[in-house]
Image (cartoon, rainbow, N blue to C red):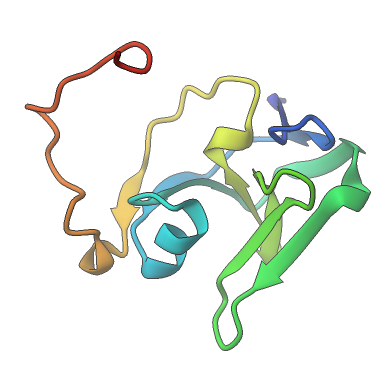
Length: 133
């Protein structure tokens, strides 16, 4: 069985996930853009994996946008996105909160009708290994 570990940015929350992910979606909906402050969210989904909070569970809080199924769990101290189960039987794990690598590549881009106008082919944009001077 695969075991993944993860944590929040400040280290207050640590967790393990035992099991496999079914899908890996890059969501371009307006809600995910607001949540991440970026072009899309990168979330792993599983209907069978089990989440165990190793420590800091008391620092985890959730927000559900009224009138939607949009849910976000995060650390109360640093705001880092954390796993949640917004729908019964479905675990949603923000890919960036994992400390262990995953070999899975994104399954699909979803809600592309809401894609940010500045999100596109970045083939000609310069790349830097660190903050440019």
